[in-house]
Amino acid sequence: MTDIDTTLAKFQLNQFRDSIDNLDAILVHTLAERFKLTQQVGKLKAQHNLPPADKTREAEQIERLRQMAQESGLDPAFAEKFLNFIVAEVIRHHEHIRGLEAD
Ligand SMILES: O=C(O)C(=O)C[C@]1(C(=O)O)C=C[C@@H](O)C=C1
Image (tube, rainbow, N blue to C red; front, side, top):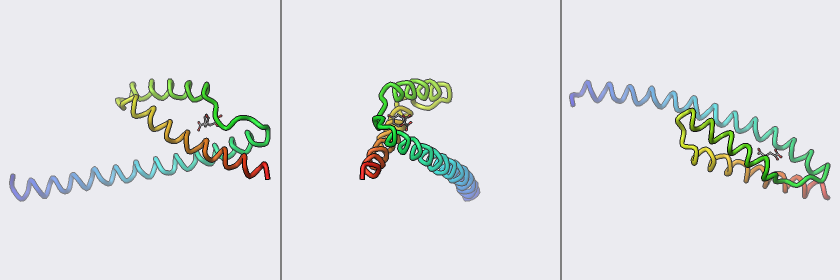
């Protein structure tokens, strides 16, 4: 490996990192939009006394995401874990909103 190889590698690494930063920004903005929507769902559910969690809906989402992950070259098990992680947080928010509405 020459100095030029190392310089080129560092340049390429920075290019990869710029792309990663862009994708991370998309992820954060997308998640923020999703949580804005689920806050509305949480209010609706609390107002109409609907349960915070819906396991049937979650099973459908998992099935759909696993399929999409498979087609995109993403590990379906990871996609499922990621969705479960987000949905657990959403349910926590729903329960919090339900507590506020009950006051
Ligand atoms: O669709 C709903 O009923 C929601 O409350 C949203 C959501 C989700 O984040 O996608 C969260 C909790 C439910 O268990 C299922 C799905």
